[in-house]
Figure 1 (cartoon, helix red, strand yellow):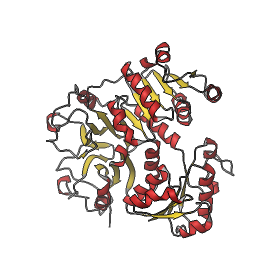
Figure 2: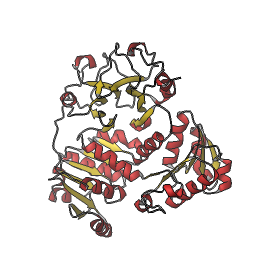
Figure 3: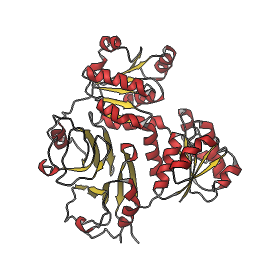
Figure 4: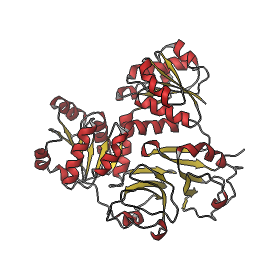
Length: 452
């Protein structure tokens, strides 16, 4: 497939990288030639300097043959116009990154969305990141939570602390009956595809797969009890903080208190006008230790750090964890800070750019692929596949699939059943299969589950 990505910033770079690694032909366009230098040096993509709204530039990029255009510049208006021009020149699936919520509801016919303008998908990084955080809050203390197969199955990751019952034990010693250890990421970033003899060590981030439910077996192993969520504090009143406050108070359960801390007084006035009365807006410096004590913020059930400044998020998160806050989730712009955040005791991190790239990649038509989830800043993936009739995997037991190194079958969903795969489990047409894998093996895995 040929794809054009407009904008060589962090999001455009990430999308172009992931598309190229999946074997697609990618042309990366940016008005600033300097912005393309890193991509030309590190990515297997073509680069083209010029405005992404220019018909001649898009023609040079091959838009007439492209099946996908992703407009990911920092300007909403440039992204929208790039999509409009692309639709006039060809028939690609057009995806526009926007920040202003008003654009997400703009349509000449009066209906939501921008489809009437020739834009097929609008992605708002803040909205996607907020939804990711809400999923994490459904399983407090987890680092990552993803649901699959219509929320019948899930993946959840936990950081293994030294006192956890699973620490220092081999997987075969854990007595797992309803859960699969699909993957492990070591503190140094090594991705481990485990077997029964794999030793779980303190500091490991372990990825469990199971049927959706209370996860009692997982909590027993990681030493984390389930606590009801009654009090949530959001630090930062920018676009992400505003989106989170909206989501938390939309159809909120009785007894949930939401507080939002913002240091800019004028922004607090805007937030108070745009948010329901259920949200308490506090004007203060989030990094002021006296304020944290006076408002008892550290005693909240969960704190979300969304100040827009990675350093401030890490500082406030450290202060909260030292004061006993059970769950801290932080937004980060730079994924290289994630290991530091974990060492500081912050359980979960969300990088809006990576979340957005994962969402865009799911829009690419890949036949039997239901979803693709990026993990550990793209070092690992969860691939949700449907087994097609006539596929090489259909009718074979798991032990005889011939899977390449670098992939583990986590779960098999068959109608209403969530199955733990064993060597003798036979794959059937129509099964949904969850795979934990390294990105480089994905092109070799998908054909096994496709029909002729």
